[in-house]
Image (cartoon, rainbow, N blue to C red):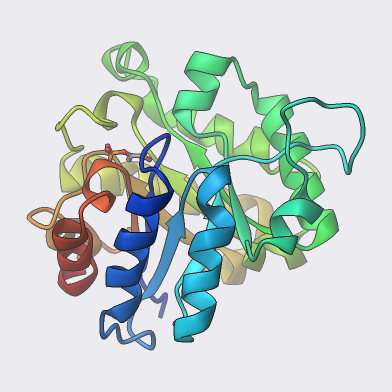
Length: 252
Ligand code: PEP
């Protein structure tokens, strides 16, 4: 039985005051962590203040970063290392978000290097994959998404799969209000799980969490989470408001 996991990706939103106010409210929620895992993914500048609130309340909400650099340290202006993220309370990093792939040119190879760096240094990862609208219209969405998973996981040993979550995020559904239909999403989640089974075996495939992202709202989380291979959600826009994020957690 895979426990649902809901992560709020705040992207480049919320000043310090706003991030603290939202965290205060979410941390005060009475969440049953035996039933659902929850995580917040603020901007770099808000990580430590958010961590301090989470720590002071004793909540089990996890903290993650939106990105990380693959080198341990050195002359990489503007970048942040795994060690730095761990030192401010992060337990995972988001890798390969489509906004980074498409706006900043991140490649599958780069994402693979970042994943190795996280695993080698003890930071978990959520690896984002998903097709563009053109790829969906060309009916290559399944192949494209599975191929991204394969390239991201290149060289990763089976024993580390527990430290990795896959997020299927069709690019055309992110921030657009369009959600993949539950059957469309399930088709890809199932294909990704089949791929994990072929590469790592039945047990690994049945344990790995594959979450969905793309305009998830309180109204559509239930039907998504009820699908066999959808294990939670990566939430962008709706995670910026306490009411909608807490409803998504309640409804999943
Ligand atoms: C995301 O940022 O990963 C995302 C899915 O955004 P939204 O929920 O706004 O579509």
